[in-house]
Image (cartoon, rainbow, N blue to C red; front, side, top):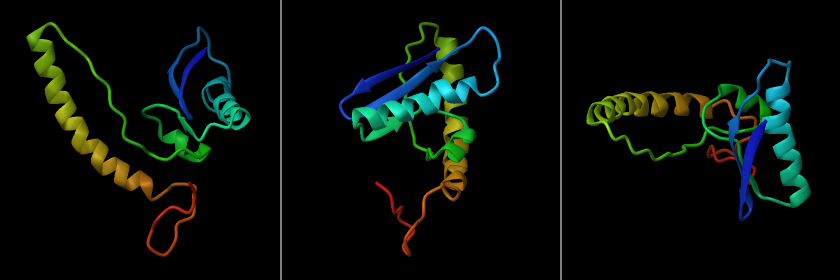
Length: 115
């Protein structure tokens, strides 16, 4: 199962789960079906969610995303703050490296020629 939500001209894909493993099922349900829906519905954007370098090969560019959580336990809150601080630095470096491998052509200035 994959859960997607449409808002305006964008389809957001966020949750995925299966009881068993099937070859390529993840890509079919999370990406290919969403892309086809966007085309049929005339949507401008498909946000396939966070994480997954495998998304580059399927035409998705790295994009920052945010989430909001409330953690009642102050110790857990502090641990998550520390982890997110480390992760932000890693995401910044990794995002720059991944952006060099997008499937879209760039003009002489480095700007994408799509969208």
